[in-house]
Image (tube, rainbow, N blue to C red; front, top):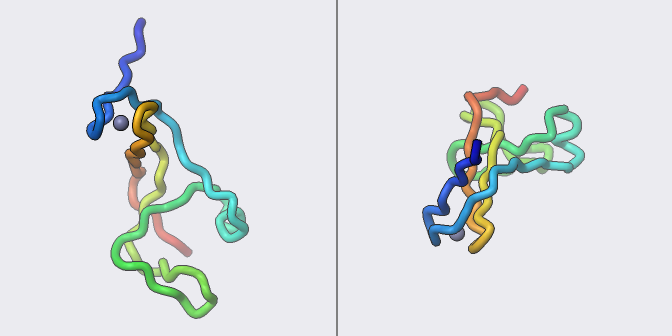
Length: 83
Ligand SMILES: [Zn+2]
């Protein structure tokens, strides 16, 4: 079976499937090490971090990268909630 490569929508090159990780301290406290997509404009919270409470968020669980131009395409999982 030959693996079918996804074609880059920008340059037509071959996309490699991968994922992204966030090694920052705050994400290690949350525990899953996955960066998230957050709906709306970025706002600073009272603790200095980004305000994410009450916003619609998704875990980014797949990131395809083009080997030719470097274009990244992100895919998210189902909606997750910050606590
Ligand atoms: Zn490309």
